[in-house]
Length: 258
Ligand code: ZN
Ligand code: FE
Image 1: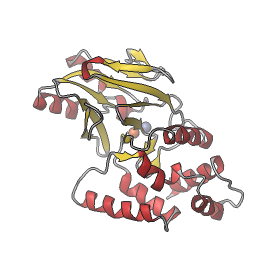
Image 2 (image 1 turned 180 degrees about the vertical axis):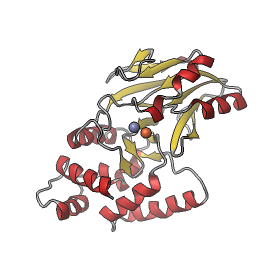
Image 3 (image 1 turned 90 degrees about the vertical axis):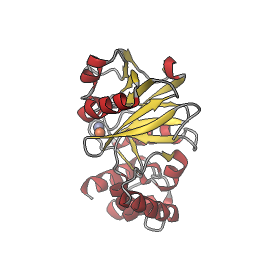
Image 4 (image 1 turned 135 degrees about the horizontal axis):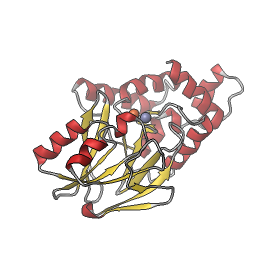
């Protein structure tokens, strides 16, 4: 998949992580959330690529553990959030910042989306969103360091991006997320269609990402906490639940138990 000139491809790692590889036709490249260096080094060597940039969305080991070994072999610039748990960031990224990946002719805007972790960020640009563990296809990240209100704010921020934006999240969780989404909203026809597509992809061993934000808005329950169907489903568990934050709280907890 691609933005303007940017090619994005997946390097599978650690079971169900994806490390996104960004190239622009030349030998320079970037990776997003390298939780393991080995599969990255293998791809770089096979394709004769030179690692110039590393983008980090949050501090969890499955997103950053490969960085030191990559920096031993390449002098790449590391972009990431302000967080003492990520000691090797060269350029700290804050809300509203714009970062230039000059060698790839690409620009990304930084969005702060604390919820899964308190310093989680996303990179948006070139028709692509790198959302880490915040916006999965048909799901969202667990609330380890934030609240349901934080996640609602994060979802609203991402939902405001153009519908054609490709969302590149960091895990292949789509099929299990889909089972939960169908439990919440069984009559959603767009979701039913997506479920068939996801099952076929997984059967064929294919990746289910990226998806467009527009498709996620039509199918992802965590982007739909103000839709009547989702509010109704949440009220079966908590009759007091109201559209938005409290529905988010109910369905996030429901998903944790699912
Ligand atoms: Zn995480
Ligand atoms: Fe993760």
